[in-house]
Length: 595
Image (cartoon, rainbow, N blue to C red; front, side, top):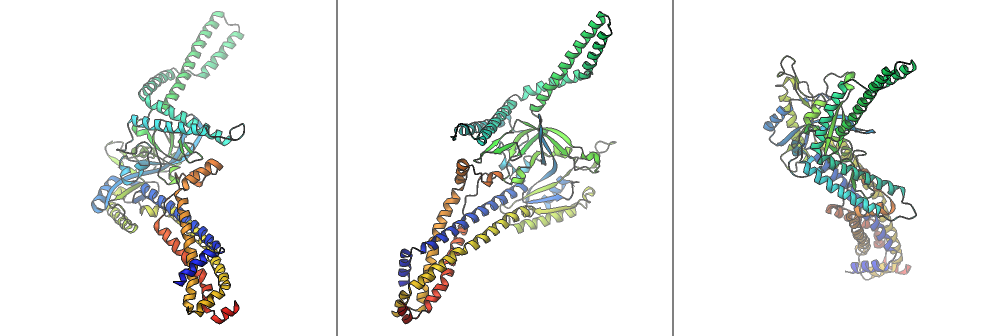
């Protein structure tokens, strides 16, 4: 009992001991925050990566593609009963452009997917902006698109009002605030334009059809601006040559009619171009944008997402047909198509969200020259089968282990080896079958490596707490020599004396760890509010916005707290070990005589 009494007394009376407690508090606080954040980031990335790629992915090596994919999926369902769903997938490369904005060119990766099939093998549907529930489709109800954009437009308007209501010092609003308000206002205008386009789908289509007919008729006349220029030159020459007035009058009339025809043609061309830009495309020409593609959305200084390009707007895709069987210079010419935006997707994997667009599977198959080829003599005879880039598999188990998925991957690969023997078109195709974790090994290992490095660095820094406890207890032992002598004189053993100081070191660490855990817990749980406050008050933008993380992970795992507290108490005991041994070795007579 005397050990606890002395330990409590020293803890209350020795002000210098608070330095050791403070050191432990800071170390525990940093460890809790860093481990929780990095673990949260890793968990989020793993969850997003698994949702993005399904459980197992079979990829064709090279750009040529994988033939007989539907037949192979049927084969896998029979031979690998652990597989619940499967869907083909095409991956190509291209460039994204916006009509009327000549300066905008953004390289993208283009994914061809089947809806709603793709949502059954991945978490694609969970990241959609409009189609968050119900059966996914490339032709969602227009009323749903309008309702969702109107909600977004209302939110954007409120965001703009808040920005405009911000107080600022001086006679002029800071340039950063003014630019942000202008960008939000531009987004609001584009969202309202998108709603108008969707409300007038039928009228816009009818107008475009009429204009296209008029344009075709006008072009058939074969007149242009160069004809007007030639007519003007001829008229000027006739006047210079003193041609008869009646001929000049006829030439003037002809030139006037020509000018009217050209003006009419140019007007029709401009109107046609406008309606082509806003007209809603058919379901085979729809696109889902990754939320994060440059200039199509942005984040404010408080992390709010502002959408510039929403459903109802249009984009132009340049697809480089890498699926051609023979690659020559002509293969470098892109296939170009107009697409209407129907949704956007946020997977949670920043490199994916900032670079991917999704289009119907069969559409990309044609643009990428991976569709089936038929004989010219017999249009029903398939010369070369249609191909895809990958097949994504979803297993039946809810939480399969990595080892289970690798076993399923090997069975799928064996099924392919047997399958291609019966299908000559697939015989020459080499494939790789990987689990979602194997596909994301580089990304996950990078984040995991950073976490380990930070833990090592913080562990080294945490040695400060051990050193502080050692120094403070060593000084305390020297100051309390008489106490040690009295304890030994009244019968306390060396082990008991050592226990006092070991218990004191553990108590210092325990108090510091408790305070550090409380502070770390409060900080992590409120880290997003703190980040928003820093951005609002000081203009400091946390890195989460640059990497398109909506929020910092704000969960603390119990095992993390237990591990950190245990390590802190152990560090306190280690720091107290040498002073405790010194106190235990003191002789009563020498200790009392020293005092």
